[in-house]
Image (tube, rainbow, N blue to C red):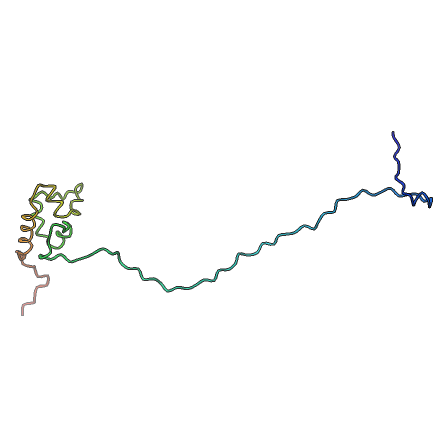
Length: 146
């Protein structure tokens, strides 16, 4: 086994003192920096007045006898003037469940699909729409007899 030599400095040789073994040098570490998490910055809440929602910009108009034209939808026409249904069914309107999309058509599209002339179709519908109802409205409450 090899003997360990001690490192002796000049001073210790002169003074005749025994030297102490040198301590190993430790690496100096810096202090650990701990990151502190900051809470997110608070955004001030700005209160705004409620915005009033407007109805869609769809043009709505009331169908009258005077404004029945080729661009009138069949469904709107049937709701406003129920007696026009007979004319449209005679001309080829199908109202079965699988053909329910026909009510969204305009009179122009309906006449083109069935090979009809639009002016004669509109005139016939207008004449039927102008006729007063043939059946009198039934009274719900019968007046008492004295």
